[in-house]
Length: 324
Ligand code: PBG
Ligand code: ZN
Image 1 (spheres, rainbow, N blue to C red):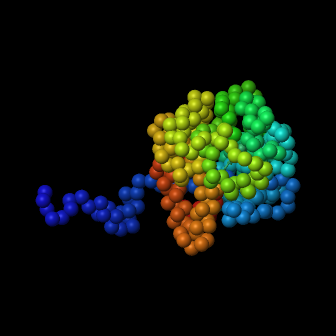
Image 2: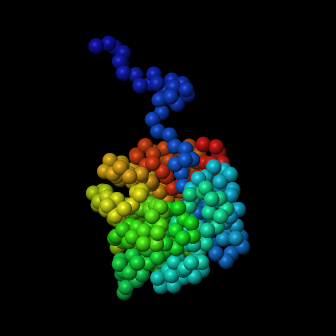
């Protein structure tokens, strides 16, 4: 007992690479990753996104080829974001049968039928004011937006999207979309709810990526980053409304929330490593301050360890090519 030596020696299990691997508690693989992509209509060439080094807007005409390239690398799922040239007050292009949302889903599924296509379901990239719904005076009108979300979801499902991912942060959006999908016969189309979505400064680079017209902020519909109880409540509401899977966004600064929701629900849980998280790693590595690949692995591993089953990350293709 009063030995001069420590009895507990955790270092015993860390002695060799083989031991460390054997006792590693958390793993992630390509099976867990979803690649978000930006697709722009009416352009001919890729457009680099300067705030997200390595990420480019894909011309619609080159989308099929890109999807094939991702599939060859082992990517199993993408999330589509459109960069629209057809903006109006309520984002009506999103529910047109041949609008950009529908075309993206169709092109992806035609190119690689096994690719799981998630359709980001919102309006901010299709509205002239850049908000995520219909404006009523200075406010985003929740219930008018719900109706439009239902229409967009049905259009995307009809075009072949496997998963509808509503990110508008409207109250009741999951229920509205579930009802609209079921009424149109799309009982098998699932809903990945952006169920706990914070009004985060980490979305900055995404706004450049999507060419956002937004002036102001989304604080009247997205959550206050300082609220932990409300974060759990938001996800549980989406579960009650019929979500098939939940999501926390952003990821890295919200590991406590991921853990809370993991313990409060039995649904699959995703986390979204957002544009600002990506940019910080890229620019930090470019400045020589950190080792990019190691930080990427550590950040994704930590998100899994916190309790996420799947991760949306712009690093998915890099990881696929480096052979995880
Ligand atoms: C918009 C939307 C945003 C993101 C996904 N969907 C930005 C926002 O809410 O302002 C952020 C993604 C990212 O930053 O990587 N509904
Ligand atoms: Zn939006």
